[in-house]
Amino acid sequence: MSVSQIRHDWTLSEVEQLFNQPFNDLMFQAQTIHRQNFNPNDVQVSTLLSIKTGACPEDCKYCPQSARNKTGLAKEQLLEVQKVITAAEHAKAAGSTRFCMGAAWSSPNDRDMPVVLDMVRQVRGMGMETCMTLGMLTAAQAQQLGDAGLDYYNHNLDTSPEYYDQIITTRTYQDRLDTLDYVRSAGMKVCSGGIVGLGENAQDRYGLLRALANLEQHPDSVPINMLVKVKGTPLENVDDLDEFEFIRTIAVSRIMMPKSHVRLSAGREKMNEQMQAMCFLAGANSIFYGCKLLTTSNPEESSDVQLFKKLGINTEQGRQYSDEAFEASILDAVKLGSQDKMFYDAAT
Ligand code: SAM
Ligand code: DTB
Ligand code: SF4
Figure 1: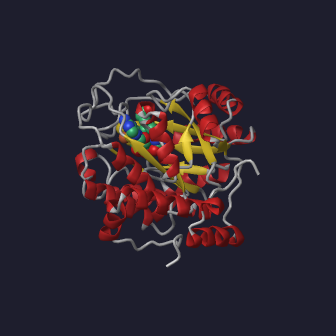
Figure 2: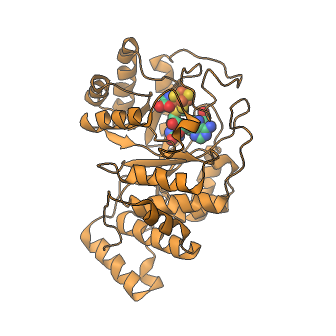
Figure 3: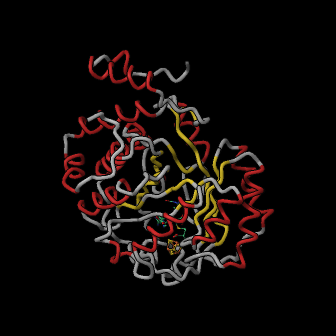
């Protein structure tokens, strides 16, 4: 089997074996596959903006925006388009290439669609990639977004099918899969991942990654979030997930979905530089950039710039190295075990 073969038939025991191999072997395998598919020193950066905050009717136990969770979050109406454009301009000036707009909706109301579509057109008109996460969509809403030029739609599976009803009861796993189908059918790219550290067990992490990788087509972008524990949510006191387990989750995502961007997502504020560097080594090649996620904080832009400088990371400019010659040379290097050939020089 080629190490970067695209598969959609993973079994739980195969995922378990990937997770539980010695850490160094796992990291080597993930980094090898990463290098077959991407420039290892490029990281894509996306900036988030909450375009409608709080009072969400869904009961997601992790979420500060659910109306059932008493988090003291101020509820806001849908933002005016001009405010969204101003935030996108700031993000672009700070070096972000994708602008991701999120709304605390169960699903968008048709009467809000014209405003949302206007946001897509205008942000795209600024030369940024666009992403939205608005909850469940109908096929018709997905088509409208696709026709307006939305590049990506984010809709996470969140956790394994087995653990799901411990976390959300107001929409089903199948509802989520249906939205992902509508997004694909409307010609948009799919951004779908999940959260770890929800109190799930290891089998649930295997199940989440298996559900993502066994989709008919791998998501183009796979956000892996570490739970941000927010006071007033039912998960505020859940035990911390071991950091190596988080890094292993990134590495296994990279191996199972070799050509997808794996995003080191929420939770970075609590991670030190070395931990983040390990995540990049494990194959993460995207982050949320900007001092705020949707409602919680994220590292300052300046500290991310410093970290990238220390690590020699470039923000991605659409360069990908997936051509056969590059892949063959990397495979040769792996076979020979040659360190010299393994390391790609970001500056060339
Ligand atoms: N309301 C829409 C939905 O849920 O489909 C879109 C916005 S929602 C906030 C997007 C994603 O953010 C969720 O699916 C979840 O994976 C992630 N998220 C929300 N709260 C989080 C938290 N406290 N820690 C980590 N990730 C979180
Ligand atoms: C995703 O997977 N993570 C982002 C984005 N998609 C929309 C959201 C993280 C939210 C963290 C909690 C907050 O800031 O409200
Ligand atoms: Fe609402 Fe999305 Fe938060 Fe769930 S994750 S409560 S759907 S905003």
